[in-house]
Length: 82
Image (cartoon, rainbow, N blue to C red):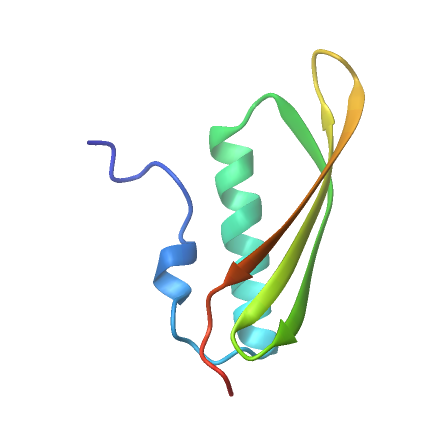
């Protein structure tokens, strides 16, 4: 098993959703993609707190070999309600 594979988002579970948590999420997502996903160049990551412990993550990137833009948006339940 490759314990270092993936991101550190699991370490942020149940932390209060605030500016510090959102900054940690940016860092965890960016670091994991930079390390493990060489097929993309990251243009922008946006994280929005929705309600309670839910967040919306939006990723804009370019596929390296095809030089095509790609957009990914997903919901994430991570933190605890503040």
